Length: 283
Length: 286
Image 1 (cartoon, rainbow over the protein chains, first blue to last red):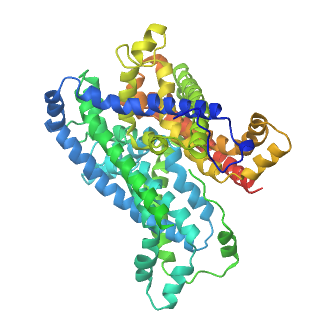
Image 2: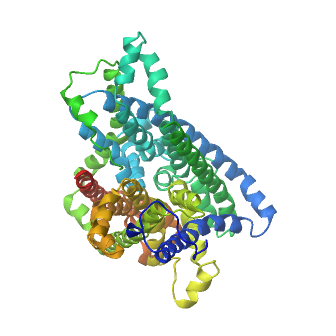
Image 3: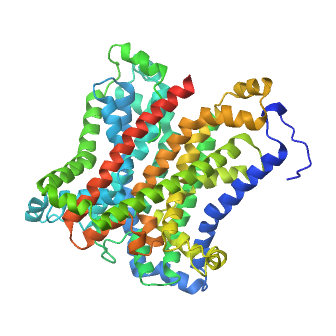
């Protein structure tokens, strides 16, 4: 970072900022990111180990934390594949065919991004809760959705609904239909065309959508809190477990559990960088 | 809420007879079914429940002093957060696109961090940083700047969660910006600052506005991080927190009233954003 060194660049100097302006802007950007983005991340780990390894280990291996980890993984394992299935079906229908109401469908797909997660949770309470629309029917058939696993899964599917389809539509749109039409002309059937032509060409975008969807599914707080009922060991996901420990004024435990989710975020970012690098490589 | 550009292929497709590809009925049918069950049916449940309630009761619960204070803080704090993000997000996008420097890759990756980090963790660590003994609070609290359990803390958390929207909206547009226009401005005698203010900023404005709208919308619905940084105080209560507080007391009517107001905000924002995005695209093509 030698400020006196002339900047060698192909850009003519008339449309370049002076080195001083450039380095001031870079310094502001880096300081902002360091304080606002990096510091919070580092702080999670420092606070988690503030009293050494033992309290950390105790918090992470506590029985209720274990069941929260299992529940979080289980919820993601159901909701992510369902949204992938929808993403593939909807993007195929939207990009390969014409039909009336396409614009409306696209707007509806965006709705879960626009709706507050706590409102999303409330929607399912009003639909399936004891006083809800289907409440009496569900009760009569002994099906428990709210304050139980199905409610958490439904709320999670709702908030992560657009992630996969949103990644797939622009890619499929850019690719058009020529390749699939060629495959069909050459005698492939619909499934073969889909699996051997369409899926390979969208795979990086699909994976990208999957990891973002997964990160949100495992980290969702508001929507899940409203429908979960906060039953320790039963309906507490990892984010809810952090909240509970935080409210018990435990100085270490919430951070210890939070490191698990911070690691998830880091893994997500690394996979994302890898996918971006990979898709650029192939382009 | 990212954009779907209307491509040339899209326009030709409209003139073509139906595509020979299979699976239209099954994929479209499944999509509509899934969308209806997961999204539309629950929304219909809210509308149905709200329509059965007495309008006067709903109105009074939606507009009592506590609710109005919550909307005010929600809108105000989201506005501040979106403005901060428009400024710093544009700066980050500019630096990432235009300059080469050590750590550029790392910075680019870090920008997505608020997307990837669960909001509960964000709220937890931000609240801790700004308390009296926290790394930032240590210096700021003696100066009278309290970033935890205050309205300022709400703004900080909302800024954090919305930051990637403004950077990631602007970045691709900035990458594709035609530098010939800047050269033309320079040839006509404009200094760099003049070019920046009169040429670059106006060209990017619709895109910056889109990023502003997206981070504003994100902030308006945010709950997870606020639960931790607001400290559950009356003066830090935003609308989503009020909704949950009412629900916790089994005040369903009160919760529905707030939810309806939040939904109306969401819809207005969604349509405004669609319109702004359409404008931004036309603007880029022109």
